Image (cartoon, rainbow, N blue to C red; front, side, top):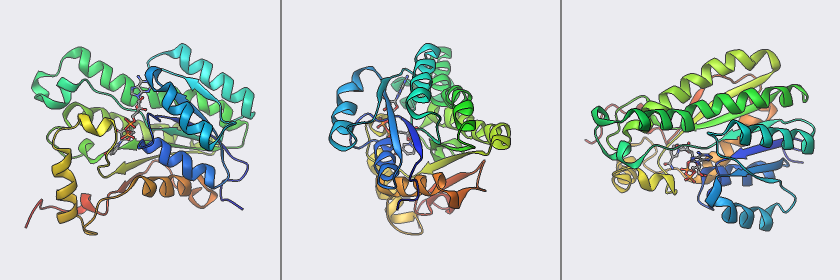
Length: 260
Ligand SMILES: NC(=O)c1ccc[n+]([C@@H]2O[C@H](COP(=O)([O-])OP(=O)(O)OC[C@H]3O[C@@H](n4cnc5c(N)ncnc54)[C@H](O)[C@@H]3O)[C@@H](O)[C@H]2O)c1
């Protein structure tokens, strides 16, 4: 018996086998959830390869989160296939490279708008469409991925930090809006992990060393840690936990000094 037997989930953000979304999907499936996936354009083959080997029946649907038409089609299809939805995973982010590496003072209006649209507004757009499907199931769980760069200055994270601040505030307001439908909305603020997106962030290797030296647990987290926490948040054990940003970073965020 899995903790998510009989539940259905929709996963946004698998790019390859290192993606946080894929780690979450594997754990949710192991706990008994039936899943559907979306992919962004060029990621199609990767996502189909991963799912065909592991979850051959899972729907795999195209979706650029900047497109309302794509989002409508995805939620329409998932509603028909699953007859409702229990779990929504938002593991999507983007900021133009020059706005990650450059000075915040130089961020362009277009770069700012794209980062906020893809990384933060997308959660609102997905939640709005998930709400009626989750109502059909008597409630649901929504999880978004975030990072400490929303609260503190992490040089090299720059524009993405601003977008994550908007995402985290969206988590809290969505928790209030969707709470009456028995839908929880939470964020996982994860420590650094080697993924495709992380390559765009400056100083990523130095970050891993710093976490090992400074975090209370003196180690980095792994993708599977996020899968485990996500499964807990989607289970009935976390039914009264909502509007929360949970730091999953070996305790790194509590430290006031970077080095001793
Ligand atoms: N890797 C880390 O160190 C780390 C730490 C904390 C939080 N996060 C967050 O975790 C989430 C997943 O990132 P990841 O590290 O697994 O990297 P990843 O590259 O595997 O995943 C990012 C995903 O975003 C998708 N995406 C970007 N623009 C899109 C668009 N317009 N439409 C649809 N999809 C789009 C990509 O296709 C990709 O699947 C992101 O929100 C990221 O900010 C990552």
